[in-house]
Length: 216
Image 1 (cartoon, rainbow, N blue to C red):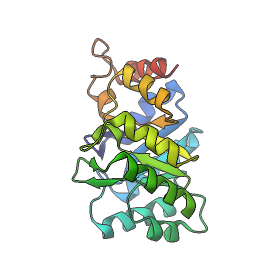
Image 2 (spheres, rainbow, N blue to C red; image 1 turned 180 degrees about the vertical axis):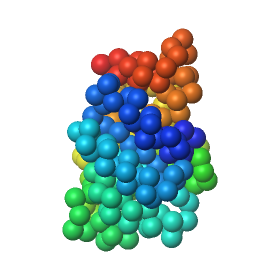
Image 3 (cartoon, helix red, strand yellow; image 1 turned 45 degrees about the horizontal axis):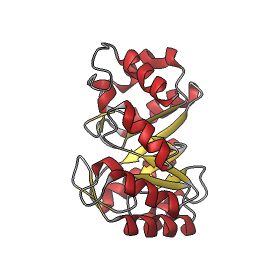
Image 4 (spheres, helix red, strand yellow; image 1 turned 90 degrees about the vertical axis):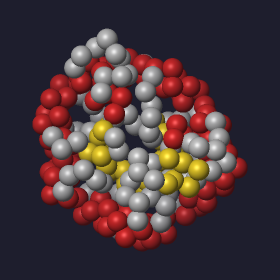
């Protein structure tokens, strides 16, 4: 994710050019931090690189979330992540190629935290799948009421779609734990930008290589 502290970095276009030699095939951004015009150009460049594009909704009001869903539809992202207005967002995306992965549980504040028990997470995932969602965007490591990996296992029971874990992935062991618990993917942004994922490495490219090595 071209994001830091739950916002798209303002120099996202330059950062994308800098990391292009890595050949990343999944690149995303948040719906806040830069203008819709910059998001549109970012989306265009991500797709031109051959990568799958993601936009995550972290806006807190209903109106802002739905506005972001319209932006995602209009600029043509591959996958829209987050938000809780599932019926309304699916209606906005109807007829487009955008696949939707909403937040299960009860996200709140910004940077976002997550309330909800494993049972609630599992129920939400089942309901979202029945509604036609492509999967879920689980804020496991932002949980305030449950163990993060218990939430991942609950979400896996609840959906056969894409189980993506977003937020506060900062260490290689977390990546291994998520894979073992059934996650398909995760997002990482701040830990790469601030150098905390691999503290002895200096550049963003080196941080991202370390992330890829952890995935392997």
